[in-house]
Length: 228
Length: 366
Image 1 (cartoon, each protein chain N blue to C red):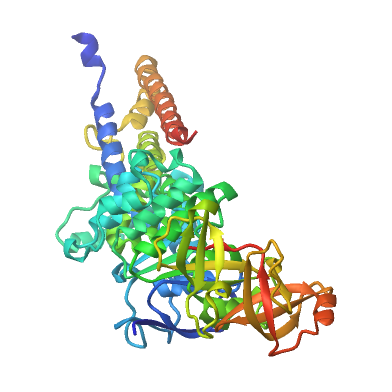
Image 2 (tube, one colour; image 1 turned 180 degrees about the horizontal axis):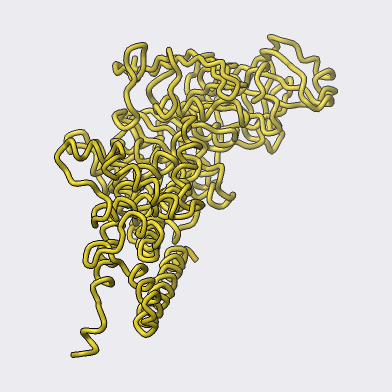
């Protein structure tokens, strides 16, 4: 009993909950963006593409800092929310989800966009000549053909959210049961010189990440496989 | 009479098209031209996959495009067979076939699922996926998939060009069956004279997006100003009727469809290897220009059995300077004869002259 009490599992569950919620929202948001980027010839395509990719190169602290400013009580999003009678987002689980979605956006958009680009316009044109309306052919042709891209996007978004630290620290802080996710918990343990706990969580994360990537490769090979 | 009227004008560099054509909404209309001549662009405009402003398209009584109206592709009752079969990779053959079938309202279906499977011989493949089919089989599935939408117009964009010779020979008979059994018009794009000759009834020739000629196939095949008559395999088509069978010699006798000049039956006779065709049925035969020689008198002491009285219409040069092309009239139907320039001079060939055309071989087109 003593050992179980010493080991606090809350950050693990919180992390999984955050990653799952983020992944769901990411797929909903990334799909239309990816489709637009894959099919449009609009002049805004390149800037939007760069904007989506920004979290890949920015230090997470930069992103977290601006989100904090924007969403905080003085920021215009924060003020808008207060005027609507809502709570501001920083230091809440919802705030973490918002930040994670933005932070992991390229990891969801890019695999889906690649999958759409690879299939080209032809399958959609064929479906049109077979009497399928634009929405009909998007759901019956474009989405199923992009399945490998969606699987990759899901796995990457989930794993990337599990591993984030800088953004969480900036916008989430360190509130037990609300924003204290795995990476923050590990940091705390190390600060407090509790190396055993830090080891358990860190090693667990390494195993988790390895298995995730292993599964991802398996999936990709399975999807390329049957044609041969 | 039912017809298709298409008018598309675009002067964009990548997309040049100058066309205002009315052609029969029946049989197969071939669109013939070299690559880059705008054939595919025209087909895409007809399908509504490309939109040219100020275009006009009317299929029988239905306007698909005019100044005010542009019917979206999925609302046009058409079938489209692309150059590559483009089967949906995530669906089985059966699911591919059902895709358009399910989206066609029951009361608009003019053909049954079984009929189409049968017509293209697809029953052994229904459970397979695209990756498990040969190129020819894939294209057959694509054709069947298009037919199952019960289209009012079938568009085919070089459906054979991406296939090897064996697959082409596998598909051509199916296309010929289509011609006989399908009752809606087909627009067939091709750069292959062989396919055009075998399949088309009507022909539109395109060059750099502009129409250079259009009309019934046979008229265009024998025109001196078009590239078709300059091809090595230049040929003509003669419409005939089955006259009789001679089982002892395994031959079938044909006569020219219209005996305009009331010529004697023994001179109105074309022999082909015996075919199971009923007497009186119409057939088309192809006569290659280099298989036709000319004599001034009717020579009975020869192994050539097809000797037809003909009148010279004109002569024109061949790409090879030692030959000339002679265009002849056989009871109102033009045929071509390729002879040497020397023979032409020795025989004293002149326009309007009566000669005999000796035809060495005749191929039944259908």
